Each structure stands twice: as structure tokens, then as C-alpha cells.
Amino acid sequence: MTIAIVLIVASALVGVATGYVFRTWALIVISPPIAVLSAIILRVYEFGMMAGVIIIAVCLAATQLAYLAASYLLYGREASSHDEVDGEPGEISDQKIRR
Image (cartoon, rainbow, N blue to C red; front, side):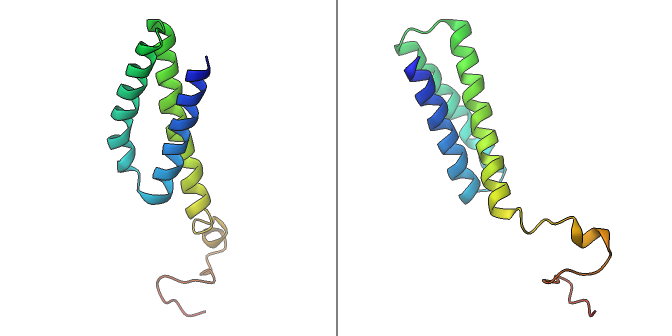
């Protein structure tokens, strides 16, 4: 059971690192290696098929959730709903609109 927790935590760390460095397309590139590596490790530790599939699914979900969390922490301040509600430009105007 310890190996499953280690795989899930490692997948989450990969998701966080991807969220800080790359964009969404990188999840498409890193998901298959995570699944294959997890399958190999789980097979070595003699996990059954259903347990292995569940752990791999949790690893992939942890990667994606960690990516979303890292992206939100990195870019969350830029996407503000307050700028769109009142119709006035924010403090940092991208279109050089005069007040």
C-alpha cells in the first residue's frame, strides 16, 4: 500500500511542476509515461489488475488536479471577474483604454 501512496504523491508533484513550467498541452505528453511507469511499478509489486487500474486512475487524476492547483496559484490573480462586472478597466489595462 505504501507504493501506491508514493506513486500518487509523485504524480501530484509532477503535476505541480508541470503547472508551473508548461501549459495544458504538456498534460497530454506526460500522462502516458505516468500511466506506463505506474503500471510497471505496480506489476513488479504484484498488485492485481483492478487495484492497479484504480491506482493508475488516481495517479492521473492527482496529476491533473495538482496541475490545475498550480496553474490557479500562478495565474489566478490575472483572471478577475471584477474587471468584467463593472465595465471599467482594471489597474493593469491591456488595451490602453483611458479612464
